[in-house]
Image 1 (tube, rainbow, N blue to C red):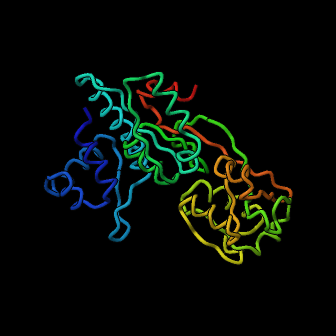
Image 2: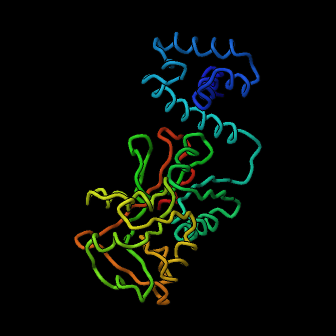
Image 3: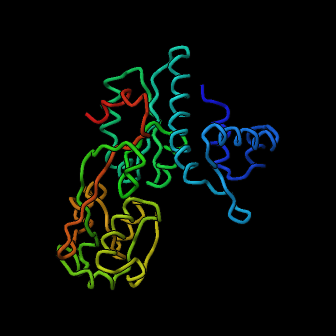
Length: 286
């Protein structure tokens, strides 16, 4: 059972406003202030400070937030474990590339091994999944792209090649080309926060370029739409191999590569550090 003061602290971390925290907790604002001061006295440090009228976490507050999140997650899992036995439920997150094109065999294997179990799958971009993980709404996530690996427990699942795609009749089709030649094209790209976009942006930075370096950019969160527009020769994109495997095999899309850059990205299992229940889903990573 989580200490009520730590629960209050976590709610204040989410709202960053004493009045809104009190409303969510159904208590008075002085009660919230009292519990936060009690925590600060216990740990001998300030957890929050004001910059003008804006409430900020101190460095100590950030450290406590990370540990308290793990405690809150484990506390909820302990309550579930001690309750009346129920079917095993895993709350899994996956980025869109993985959720749409990679994860199905993993879910299938889990359900065959645990016929009584169920899986709740959330498909979102990397940024949203990590937030859900920190808020205790997921048990673990399988993500692509870049993230702060010091904040989580991490294990590599696999690496995938990452390359350009275009219509078969496009001048870039089947070639290895310098980046300068690609910059003259309309780019079809995922939304900010997606792992797919992060991989591309990292490659561009290495060449002192950004998305604005392209002649045009169309931002689309849906893979099907990106591929359809590329098939119609209305732009080029950069995607992981599993996303375009069928289209390449059918000749609807063609691959091109950047000269001097063999692009690839890693898919990682990510979960909270100090998760007491990680053993419940270790067979996912076998």
